[in-house]
Image (cartoon, rainbow, N blue to C red):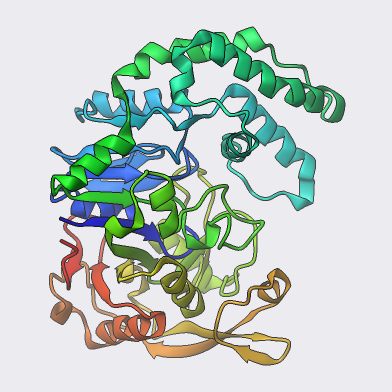
Length: 427
């Protein structure tokens, strides 16, 4: 049975939660392989709306085992709060597994994140201030705290001391902040240990055995391709690898076991935070996309920047992820436009460029080159098959498919779990 990767093909917020949830009933394991509670997935089940931040979307599917992989950074307080909220709503969370090798977001990571972003002022990156970046920095600097460290007080204390040796110097001498006490941090982290212990496991072993036993494993990325630390619009990116390669390093499952890579594309483009965005709109169309699409960040609460579909970005996502399929979401939001612009190339210094420039300077100065596709006026939220869509909506999907370089295998025509057209089932 297959191992599938499902990831964002733009700047995040494409609707990955809905796509994961769509597959949830047929999947045995859903794995978050990177990021932390800076990601956000909205899933609508019947008349119930769930906003997930750290937990895999598969936690809403009975019979599915949700897994937080080793590539994720975990804030224990957020994790326990999210679990409590779901339990209160009658969701069974008992099957959750957390990698003992996942890194812990400590209180000092959150503090450093917030003060650093404020210090940068106009040069700020646009982080969520949740300690994600500093935690990944600690991981790379080999002073990070892992989940397994919560169960050895001596090791935990030594690691916190090592991390705070430098951080307290920065906080007090550079930012004029109060030093953070080692024992206070250790006490807080130890307070979470027993509460999350039932979930902690050797998830690398669990997942590989599951695949050996012909179970279906779905790897769920947070954020999106253009926010990847290596392949995104650096430095306006996240601190991990949401691209397909990150699924392997963030879970301990080898690339030869991945059979399908599904990219989630919104029928237009959005972005949260700072950084270049060639098709961004500052007019009534941009405001209409924001209003109709409900474009407000699930995690950040910030309004998303909105623009027309960017085929250059979609082609890039196909290339760096090895995408086999697209799930096109929010097609219904575009109902009502007479014509719909689609960015097919950029103009940079008077030259037409059809692929994403590797130079940050060039991308910052890229101007969109548009083609205009005929729109539609009919309500499409009740469509069950591709043939049910208006001809112009069908034409729009086919045009995006051709421009993007991979087939569209599913289309979201509304926010509900059942408001999806499956053209080529993923399983």
